[in-house]
Image 1 (cartoon, rainbow, N blue to C red):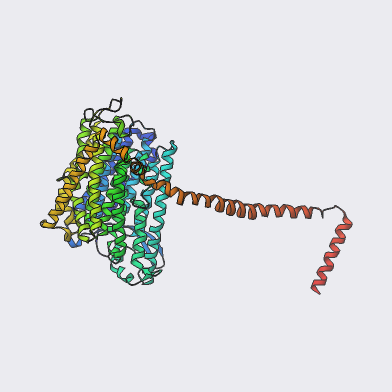
Image 2 (tube, rainbow, N blue to C red):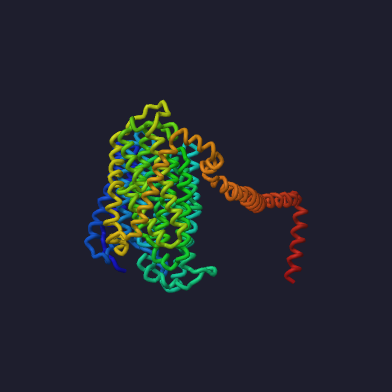
Length: 630
């Protein structure tokens, strides 16, 4: 096993765990709001500092030997099967750890202002710290079994934070929907892991750390499962898990409802970190997908379809957080596009820039909601640029970045993804990705116009958010401004030296120009169709299409009709009515009791109290016994 032993790695994950324990155990009683909030933020800041120290030491190693390891203890041991609780820090883990801890720290600081006065303040920060702990376990794990612990942990924390205000039945239902939908995907993920372990064990491979897997994965080449290639089956099962965690078709339906949670939660978990776990998993398991080109084709097509679907739905939503939710679904589709073409570094690059500008947009939305006393409908806003100037300026940075306008972050990463899709050689996929880029610029421009421009549509007097909320937004805006250029210059070469390019080819320049023109057209269309008279006229002419898109193509209703209701009937009539109430309770439990009662009733008739009858019975029994013996 290669890699330098590096005991500092454990200190990346320990501060968030300590913050969870302290805020959850004694926070409300001894720390209060001020102490609990800053404790939670300080825990994440420490994790970021340790991540940066590890990153700086990693940079000092030769490019081909950048790997640090820390084994805490042997976790599972059964015969030759052994799993360590071990952490790894390589370029991929380093980027993810810095993004997770850096963005998380800013959102923790923002949350101190946003959640002020909430009765569950300390519980909120406890959950948030626990989430960061599990997310760090996921990205630092040295084997897929430990990664799965982090994978499930972030799902649990997502459930807790979506349903944080559980007194509202809708919030509780949204938490359950997210949890159950993710369990469907996680079942596929777990089956894939078990199949991978089983098939390698048959070849004599007992270790499951990523290095051992990469060295021995070729043993699966040529193997089959149910007549299909083993790498392809395993890759598709793992990807199915990713569609749940990363909200891709067909398991994306939980993410829009997840907006029921506090807005900083949406910024952290449902934009910048957890929903990108599937992209990270594909990049981490790239050695497997190298043997499964058909699985990568499925990843690519799914990413393109989800990106376009999410952008179309986002274009007609009226809830500011729902627009950003479907935007997130769409942008993660871009990341899967890159992974599907084998350009994992490009996918992680877009993951990084997306974390900056989407967290910024979510926090800006939270600032607007905070300033508008909880209002989320964009048609009841308008004119806020005069009352919330700083929030407007920062939102404008996020708007330009996600639209793909140079030289902001989204331009560099999105353009690189589209370039790889074009090079893949299937024009229709590139056209779909380009259309998604145009729609992205359209719906985020529409959001900006409806929220901040024009006249006021509400009597509510909005107010600017406090510095605790605007300073983290400003930091994210700075990253959205500079992150693309820095990423293209340094990040890509750090992740994959082969992906770095010295100059842009004429073909790449042409594609870039097409992408920029499409984005500018989307921006112009967003402003044009945000004009009330034009928007109303178009809505009347296309009322049926508008209704279908606004209602998200009725996918939730279709799932309810085709899946949820039949399962409920199955559970009610068969599982409960026949198996539980009828067979187990009715026949086995209550039936045994009734049999015992009736048998006792029969035997009770024999207890007459007549001694002659007892003697006669005894004699008869003795005669029968002697007859049987003789």
